[in-house]
Image (cartoon, rainbow, N blue to C red):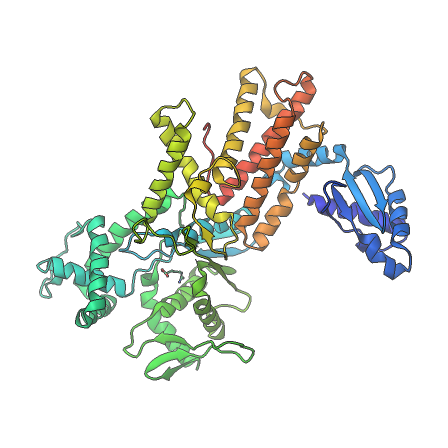
Length: 587
Ligand code: ARG
């Protein structure tokens, strides 16, 4: 379906043409003075110079040309030359009717790209902490936005599973349980199926070992050696690594799952280990990689740089690979295996320079085709009330699991307040609503900005929050249920002309769904969807307070209202599904 503003612009363009002016002057926008009109066109002002005519004269001619038309119910030319417009109720109703039956409410999904979204980025053997929430939540929304727009989208978690932290876990385990068969070099048999640690043990081993390595350089050297041995394929170490991965990934899947986040690919830095030698070879042969102080680097600075962009290091002087190396090899793998048109990285914005280096290196060494798009979507930090990165009450790093549990608890308390529900019911509802509180609280901010995590505000049923949206959806559902109980069939209800200004305002905002979605896609901006659903919810609630719905005596009019409710519900539910959360049946 054509976007509403485009239709209005076409109509206006025709009027300009009819009056002897260029159709290009007919651009219609949403009014910035909603007290005066719904839409406006400033083309007469723009045309004045070109046609050497007073703008008000042109505006008057356009208003006359539009007389008797079907699209606008009111066109007024006002000094010095604005065109104030009101949409005709009939035209709006016809547009909404078409939206209601069209696929994706008429949003033309033109995406034809294959897109890889690199998000999540968890490091195995460490629990997810609050710092991981943004990548997961934003990445999942971006993935769904791209999918909705018709693209083929693949999410890859890109685990941190190959660096020093693995050597640290291996050393930590060796300290605790030196007699394990994995550390016996002469052992040639099969290794046990069962991991020699639980997830909780694993989570203790890593921080202890990491702390020790900071205090004890000799220990750190051993951990680095263990990392190298692991990467070189020492059997016992690979077997431990397999255990770490299994235990850790099971736990990660559970945690991401509780946020309604899932990945098509569970690849990691380790997945491309075997590709590194051939990539290094290729970069050397191409003349791009050269030695610098023993290390292998690719220069990536450009003449136009205003700040220093250091070279991209491919191998350290001891031949070990780095974070860069696995990222570049991953690009190589993706280009060969998935052939994406675009790769989007949803990573902390503090890694922006790093990705600039990686992207330049990938382009320079022709790992990607010139037309392959590489996007860095950097996000800001989730802060506490003090404006510093969010911490636990005693100042420690907050585990994501605990943040989710705390939010669910808070939601449970709020659901119980003043509602006659059993604890069990309240828990079930609270679990769903809490996820909306967390995710909407994050997504409603522009990704690149920092935000303050405010559990009280995020879980509130009022204001710009997830629970407010869900509450609105549930309210609509309950009206529709009552309609059904009274013998109505809302699936058959037909839309009609708006009967009051509140109803019209809601309808006009619903009609903008396609425009809003295009923006969200083009700007990779989930917060645009948040702004939209919040608006729709507000407009709905105003309309609801001002309009008799089930109590409406006129049967045809009642049906029209019910049909508008159905469309509102569907647009809201579709939108929050794209954001990655859902509404309960009641709350
Ligand atoms: N594991 C990394 C970290 O904790 C994030 C991974 C981001 N993605 C990537 N392709 N480098 O910082």
